[in-house]
Every structure is written in structure tokens, then in C-alpha cells.
Length: 410
Image 1 (cartoon, rainbow, N blue to C red):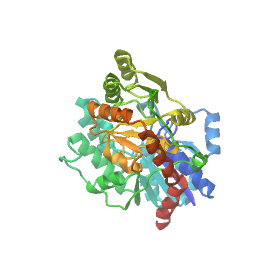
Image 2: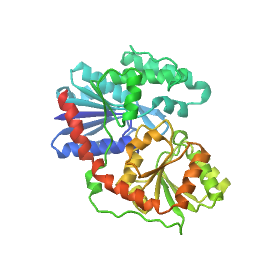
Image 3: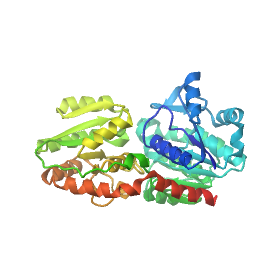
């Protein structure tokens, strides 16, 4: 088949969506399929674009100044559509368009699919209602959400309107973001979500197209070496790794405060933080103020993170009500590293007995969970073995087998 990916989160970024697209592209191409990737991008030289083109990766027209944090922002969908049809007219004959995210490049992909009667798959990755709330200052959230809806509805109709409620759309801004997500999903032929709990939420708010929960996977090649279960006896500091964004929605500040409480209660630890984000300076300042045993490495390659996970006793993802999957947890599973989570929804991603779930997502709850593992260090080996036993199920080839079955039905 000929498959075109459209994503607003790929070039010039790191993270779960990037890892997912790379793994799927590699596996699909290994099976003989042709895969193009169209992505928003910061300006590239002719030499850089030529190198990307050899891998069938094509930057679309993007804003030179504006972006979402560190992410490049695509131009208007109409501009992107004209560029793609001018530079790659062959996409008219592709078999499937496969969109990730809900911004300009992804909108263009869905619109082109409609125009040429090509089946479209939309992957809904995240809680944009929570993302907007964490990115935008309090006084501007409602107006920004309304403007985003207005812009989105220029290109994709909004027949479904989500109103405020006591469940997830608890504010006008959140309701508007759910309106955007639901109508975007309904513009595709089928919808993929990385977890069952997010699938249920989308269906609750009005997604009417078939929605399939399909966990992300790890490149099979990374799972070949045999590994042994980790051991920890409490005679040395607990080695903890953070390799998510250093930002509000990931809740690094509450976790650092939990470390302080655990430290005062006698827990010896060392935290390595890989990644960057809007709260990096705030986190560094708090570490200095509290005298925490934490080292920041900034953005690093996945290879560096993988080596850190191999040395670690515990991997941390303490977002709450935000992550729909948590690719970092699957990367931890690949190395046999037990996980520390605060959101019970994320337990869906992991096998039972492989993680520590804080009794509450607040600072006190996380500190209590850290102390429990410190007082029962032998649990690390048991949790690690559960992760190792889980590795065959997270192979990307298993995911792509299921994905192709969904696509073939189209």
C-alpha cells in the first residue's frame, strides 16, 4: 500500500508521537509499503530537505515565528494542501491517509482525503483540553479555546457541540477543546486511540466513527537482547529516571516536593531528569532551594535515555488526568524498569505488579508511595520481572499487525 502520514508533532521534536511515527514507518516499510511523512517544520536548508526526502519525509509550509512552545506551527491548511498537491501530485493515488494530532498539517491531510476519496485514519493522542489549560494563562484560556474552535471550524465542520458538565468539560475552555477534538475525529473514517480509557471519553462526548484502542509499541529491534531483572536492596540510593517534558501538565514540581518529603523521612535517592520544557528553570530553582539530589540533562537522544533506564531502579510519569498513554512507560518496560505513576488510568498501559501507584496524586500521596518502595526494596526485582515478561506484547510488529487489519477494512 501507499500510506501518507500527516503530523503537526514530528520534525524538530522529540517525544511519544515522534517515536510512534518512526516505529510505524520503519515497520510498514519493512513489509514493503510506501510511507510518506508530511510534517510542520522549522526552516530547513536545501541540503536538509534533500536528506529528509531520501527517507520520504517532507516539511510543509510553517510559520517562521509562531509555534506551540518548542513545536513548529504549520501554515493554514489551505496553504499546506496547495503545497502538497504541487510538490507531490502522486498522493492523489495513495491508498490511506494517516493523520496525527489536530492542527494545520493534520487538518490538511483529512481534507485532502475527503477531496480525493481516500480512506482516512485519525490518531487521537492527547487531552487537548488539559494541554490548553496548562499552556495558556488563566485569564486567556476561554478566548484562546474559542479562537481555536473558530479556526478549526473554517476547515472541518463542527456539527457536534460539547457543553459544560461535571465530568471533563468543567469549564467553557475545556468544553470548546472537546468540541474541537470530537469533530476532528469524526472527519476521519476510523479513529485510533492509544488507550481504552481515552476511547471511552471520546465516545462519551460524541465521536460517532469507529474508534479502536491500540497501544503504542517499541521497535522490535530494541527488544532482542535478553535482560535480567533489576535488583535493589536499599543499601544505596534509589536511582530514579524522569524522561518526560519538564512542564506543568507532567507535574514535575509536585514530584520534586514529594522527593523532599521522602528525603526527610529517610529515603535515599538520586533523580536524573532528561527533557526540557516550560518549567525547567522553576524546577532547577526548586531543586537548589530544597537541596535535592537531582541532576538535569536537558534534551538528549533516545539512546542516552535508554542507557539511563538500563541503570535505573524506577521510571517516573506522574501526570494526572492528562496522558492518554504514556510512551515513557513502554520505554521503561523495554528496559525492564519498574514504573512510578500517580494516575490510575495509566495502569492500563502496564501489566499488574510492574508499577507503583501513588495512593493520591498530591505531594503527600507520592511521598508515601516512594517511602513504601524504600522500605520494601525487594519489590523492585519482582516489578522488574513483570516488565520483562511483558516485553513480547509491546513489540511494534504486533501493533502494526492490528493496524493493518483496521486499514484493510477501509
